[in-house]
Length: 275
Image (cartoon, rainbow, N blue to C red; front, side):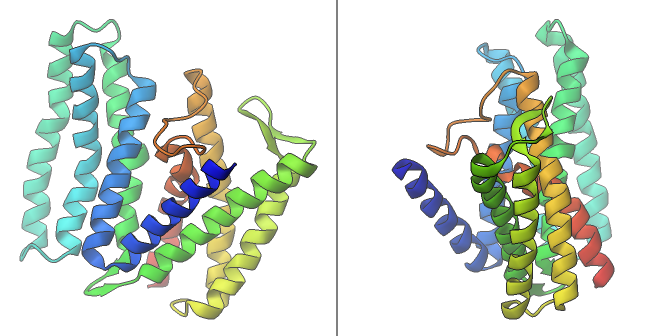
C-alpha cells in the first residue's frame, strides 16, 4: 500500500509538472505517455522474444506516434503552411504504414495480417486519441492546461471512487465476462463523485460554464468506464493481469490511461463544438 501511494504521488507530480510547465513540456510529457502506452499495448498483442518481434514492436510505436508528432508540429507553430505540411506528412505516413506489410512478408510470421492489424490498431486506439488531446489543449496560440487537468482529475476521481467503494460495497458485477471485479455500486459511486468533482472544477477553472463541465463529467463517467472495460477485455484476451510494470503497485501506464484514452475523442468533439 505504501509503495502504491508513493508511486501515485510521484505520478501525479510528474503529470501536473508536465501539463503546467508549458506547451513544450506538455508535448514532451504526452509524447512519452503515448510511446509507453503503445509499447505496452504492442507487448500484449504481438509475440515477442525474437529480434524480428522487437523490430515489429518498434515499428508499431513509430507508426502510433506519427499522428501525435505531426499534430505537435502544427500546434507548436513550427510550420508556415499547415496544408502543405499535412500533405507531406501523409506522403511519409502511408509509405511507412505499408512497410508493415512488406516487413511481414520477410518475417515468416504465422499470422502476418494479424500482426499488421494489431500494429495499425495501436495507432488508432492510442496514437489518434493523444493527437486529439492536443486539439483540447491548444486553441490557436492559446494553451489551456486547466482543461486537460480538469479531464484528468475527473478521470482519476471516477477510477478511484469506483475502485474504493466498489471493493468495499460492491456486489453486483457491471460486466462479469470482461471485468468480474467491476461492480454497479462502484460505477454509481464513481459517477456521483465525478459529477461533484466536475462542479468543483467549474468554480476554479473558468474556461467553460458549470453546465459544460458537468457535461464533460458525464462523458468521463460513460466513456471512461467503457475505456476501462475495453482494456480489461484486451488483457483478458491475452491472459495478462497488467499492461506492464512501470508503475509499482499500479501496473503499466496503459492501465492508468485506459479510460482517459477512450474518452478523449468524445471530449474533444464536445469541446471543439463549444469553440
